[in-house]
Image (cartoon, rainbow, N blue to C red; front, side, top):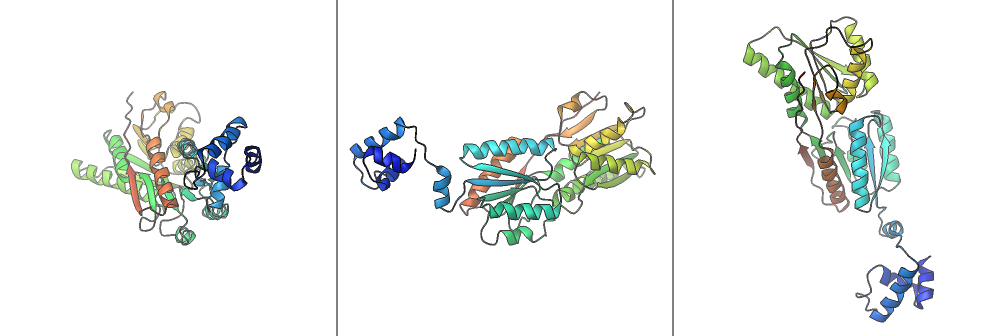
Length: 335
């Protein structure tokens, strides 16, 4: 059923039918009798307005783009689900693409989404904050919102967890066990999220050494190639070729912790496991492991809501650059 057919059955012009179904009858001074006649046809034939076509006529697509770095990452999958649901509730469709934490792939996908005329782009970027790519992409006013990984705060709005404070909490939790060798495992040291988490870890170490007067703690920072399970396993395996197993391990993402666990449990439960372990992210599996692992789950719903609010504000040209911080809550596990 088309609008032209609605008009024919109601005995009015196509323009009049359009005004009625789009809620402009009163403004156009269309008589109540005509409105009633048109709406009777609409209801009888279950006619629905083509919102997509109407949006395109206004220069909108009613679509949003979401670029995430890893489709296998449960945290990003959860965030994608909440963003899609929230977008749908606001009458938008969400296009989801994956960069695999590859800078060139990210650039290509961002250009593609803009070419597809998405109204705004939400990205968990693997690019350095000082990379000019997104500033150039947004020169014409195209809204770009950072999520989980902050973009340049001078030019863009982002929604992220309080990474520095969270890393400090995680590190302090394992330092309570007085380890002699601590391993910090992250990835992509050039991006803002890694820098912030590493800074929090270093602050906790400095405070611990100042408070205890201990100089015996050996802390090692290890960079995996990507925030992926396989990369975490590869980094730890290589480290263990020339160093003993540390008695405390902190990972900057749960995907990296997955890789660590793959190595530790490769031949069954380890005979001499680390004293303490902790990770960003969370999984119910941690409640059942023989090793107590502290975790920092994200507040996905709060992040999704704040991100969509910024995206819609950006579409209206009302976004203010800066960072919205969402706090995490430490989950302690003791066996």
